Image (tube, rainbow, N blue to C red):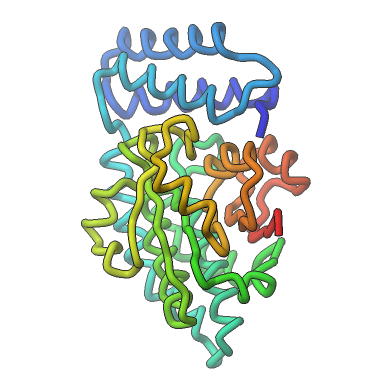
Length: 292
């Protein structure tokens, strides 16, 4: 996905957000924002991939702040809230003794709703004390784009690229049904902390590595997947996958730049730029299969 004219404003807003998470020093916050503006001035062009620019801005912000993980406390909150909503999600998924394909569709829906755990996206901060009600409401609404039936015959060798902390606990509901259906799962996490995204430490904390067949990393702390920094093992996994399942907007922004497939984008359309690029509306729950 190429950058939209609306993107720089949002990116800079998020730089300011993470600076405030990291420090109370107003001068350092100003310095961080100024560094973000400098990156924009040097790298923003209409044909620039959105993930390339956002990665450059956040890496610079972390460098100026001297903080390798400004979102650490918020990631812990996300995990706590998601862990509390898990029983609600499981009850809804298995309500009425659905058949296997319906369980898969419902699990994907639960995972997509979990994509709300995205602190700093303008207008879509999660409200921890109200998330269980929000979850149930969105679950009853269902997927606005539902290609899950077409995915059922593609689950032999899945590469599943996760997004945020919190939501990964809901992703495990998808892992469970894929394994029960006989599929293999290669889980892909970030190579190092960036925003509130999942890293290997988070996977090990909740023993999610035991729920899948193997875990790979993107090789770096980049927004989505930076292919120039991706390990060969990850590229081979993409090449050999029966289905790539990509969670969240950042992964969409970067993976849509490559001709990978088949690939299922699982996300909430939380911004106009991504929604427009996908030909959808803001606020949709999406399980969209492309490049089949």
